[in-house]
Image (cartoon, rainbow, N blue to C red; front, side, top):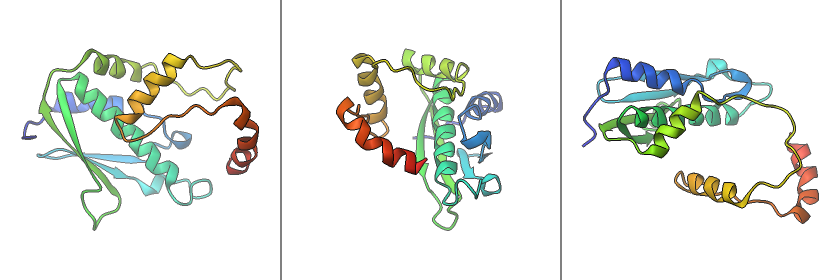
Amino acid sequence: MFAAIPDREAIDIALGLAVRAPSVHNTQPWRWRPTATGIQLFADSDRQLTATDPFQRALIISCGAALHHLCIALAALNWSTSVEYCPDPADPGHLATVRTIRQRPSDAQIEQAAAILLRRTDRRRYLPRPIPAGHIRALAGQASAYGAAVRQVPDPLLPRLAAPMRHAA
């Protein structure tokens, strides 16, 4: 079913958007390998920050962000994606293989791909104002599509979470 392959120009455009993904200290710890059957994603452990990320947690999260950006970029270019995670048990650095099929993008996918170009890192503190409920619902809907959950922490619990969060940081 997923036999169609984007041409080189589409792959280059999609990878150009994928590498705009956020990564720990902008290390971009990923490698891409287009093949005849898909696009492979590898973790680049040479870019691991061993002092601050000894277990590669941030490295893998960074690779996940790049994988997401690739899939969104391909969708905007008329390619639906199917991702096989950790496809080679003998190679733990081979994180995913993306396969494609022609499909018209939704308006939301086009908007998401356009947003990749607008993403910037902002390390300033958040303003102390409430997040609109509609934003929380939209974020929760997006997260659930990937098997994750979004929950807003009630204000009374914030002081109890502050100490463990400071310790984790």
